Image 1 (cartoon, helix red, strand yellow):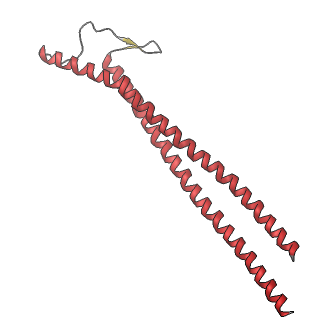
Image 2 (image 1 turned 120 degrees about the vertical axis):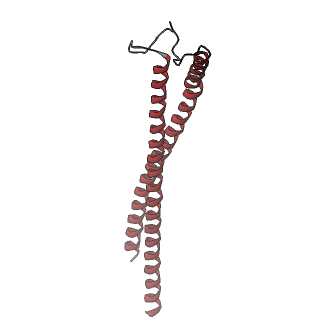
Amino acid sequence: MNEKKSEMNEAVMKQLHSYRWKGRVLTMLALGMGLLSIGAGILLMWANAAVIFPEVNLMLQQSNAAKADNTNSTAIAGEPLRALPDGTKVDSQTLLLLMQGKAMNVTSLAVTLLGVGTLLTLVLVIFNRRVTLRQINASLAQISEQIKALQQSKGA
C-alpha cells in the first residue's frame, strides 16, 4: 500500500514539475512581449517628440509664411530636397508623410505585441488553473486512500 502511495506521489510530483516549467516558459514569454511593447511605445514617443513634431512645426511655419505671401503652396521655392538612405530625394512634406507612416507601423507593432502578451497571460492563467485543479484532485485522491486505509485498519 505504501509503495502504491509513493509511486502515486512520485507521478504527481513529476507531473507538477513538468507544469512548473511550462508555466515558467509562458511567464517569460508574456513578460518578454510586454517589455517589447513597452520599448516600442517608448521608441514611438521619442520619435514623435524628437523627429516628427519639429517637422510638423516647420511645416506650420512654412504654411503661415505661404498664407502671408497669399499663396496656397507651402513649398518654398528653392527649398533643398532631403536625401533618404536609399538616395531618393524628397521634399519635407513627403519626408514627414514617410515618418508618420513609420510611426503608425511602430504603433501597430506595439498594439500587436500587447495583444500577444495579453493572450500569453490568459493562457498562463488558464494553465495555472488546470495545474491547481490537478494538484487538488491528486491531494483528494491521497486523502481518500488514507481514509480507506484507516477504515480497513479499524475494521480489522
